[in-house]
Amino acid sequence: MPWQRLRPRALADYRFCFPLPVQARIALLEAGFRPGRNMSVCAVDDLPRCAPEALVLPLGLALSLADRKQRGLFDLPSLNTAIVVLTSPEDSPLADRHRDLLWRAFGVPVFEQLRGSDGAVIATECEVHDGLHVIEALPDLRGEIVTDHCACGAETPRLRRPPPVLAKAAPAAVPPPIFKPVRGRTAFPIAVLTMGYFTWSFITIYRNRSFGRAAGLRPCA
Ligand SMILES: [Zn+2]
Image (cartoon, rainbow, N blue to C red; front, side, top):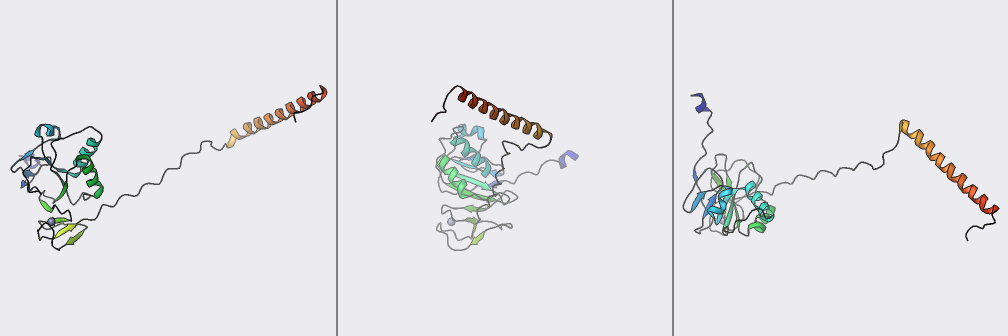
């Protein structure tokens, strides 16, 4: 049937590996993972009911929840273990400012896991937070491969991704002048009115001075 060829490709089903050796209730807010022990696929609206102690979610959603948390629009008191942020080669890497925002909002450690185009995790961050341990062959990425021994004990090479390049701020727009120059047909009547006003003022002052002298008045000292 033609419609069968139009069905979207099924997402790969990978087992999710939590980066900490603890038993925690984990909410998966991203498709493509097979929930393991203590894990459940959960929607954002169901988080209060799931009461997870750890979240696994894309970077954009994590930042959105952190922003809402700081504005008092979202709360998840059960979250007390970790946040695992999923990124992809097309995304910007998890930057320090992202970590700061997530830490200020939720107060739990943040781990990055990089997924390939098929959804498989290809590099994962350990508790040392010094690059991502490479699990599978990486696509063409900007970054440094580090091969020294990691303090976590793993000997796999690590990928240190450079911080994202911030877009330059656009130059400030020049505000329009409050008084626009007068040109053309409008200038002549205004000039005539201005000259008339000064002429009238001069005549008025002169007449008042003449009247004051005639009345014997002296100007103020
Ligand atoms: Zn490590």
